[in-house]
Image 1 (cartoon, rainbow, N blue to C red):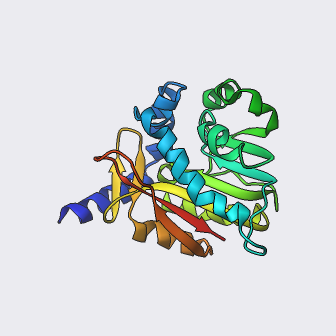
Image 2: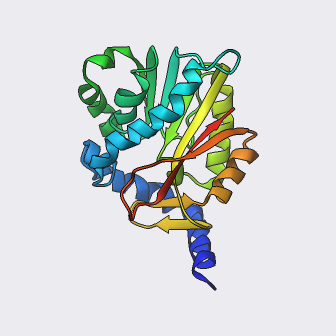
Length: 232
């Protein structure tokens, strides 16, 4: 068995374990409530990350009708302490909701976000494997560095629920680490990194159409490649 097949086998077995979610929750419960903690010790990449996301997202907010996405309300999925809400979404949207399974992260978010927190709508303490957005609620649903914490089945079901949560002409954006091939399981935080083939298959199974894919630039050598997906 080559390494790719062995990694896929290990990852698929890991996602079947009862402890897949509880091990992840235990890991994150010990992570500092800081940007450095959220980014696994790579807090220095936050600015470059946000710049790449902004360059990817903003054109959809300024495009000619009917391609334009409105800027009323966004959802930050797996929001942590609100890094993406603060630096990417609140500068672009009138209001933002955060959904995060770790209660301590959410409690730290208002202080981290600062004065702009007055424009946060809701802080939702729930895992994405069960979270259901209100129908036609969001112009943009932003999902970053969190789908690796979900099983394949839960990714598909979550994305399907996100579709029902989109306002008319709304869009879903995914930004994730990408493996070269197959699946890679990380037993430290109980997460899975998927290849483009694996991730695209889940997106398509959920009934979404991929409009654009772009690689994040300027990340340090040695990190997983990161890709951004725009979908409807």
